[in-house]
Image (cartoon, rainbow, N blue to C red):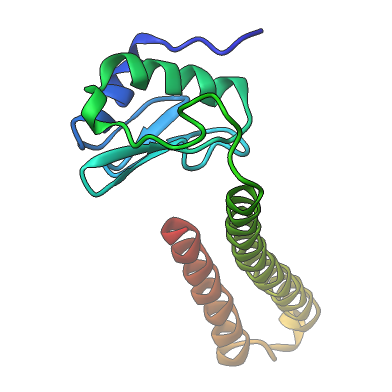
Amino acid sequence: MPYRMTQKDKMVAMAFLNQESNDSKKLTTDGSRLDGNWMGGRGIAQWVGDQIKLNDLGSKASQTVHNFIRKNAPRNQLKHDNALRGKSASPQERIANLLNRVAELENKVAKESRITSQFKQCEKDIISYFKKVSEDENNDFYGPTYESDLKKCFRTILEILKDLDDA
């Protein structure tokens, strides 16, 4: 099914043209860059100085958004390059675009991997804490040591959640 822009998507695109922030289910803008909320939809268009540069992402959805922008933006605001003239971007431009996308994804994966390992370690600590407590409860051996271990786990969880909020 082809991508169709909803009224909210059109409002986001118009906010981008006015250099304001807005978002919808499918599109997001901070005023300087327009992104699609789908895999590979980052950087559909961006402001470069006082002109709009439309980035060739190779998807029908981004082409639909480009067409809307072309229809609604003043001609002097569109940056004329090969993609706007119907020609494909140069191989160097495509390679540079792909390298940027790969770098962004590698950073995201590295951060998610670190957070996942922190969660797994915290899960192990909590399980071992409850095993110790259940084994030692009758011996009156548990107390401040186990409590400090548990508090450490909860601090780690709070740090992980803060990292997720920042991401």
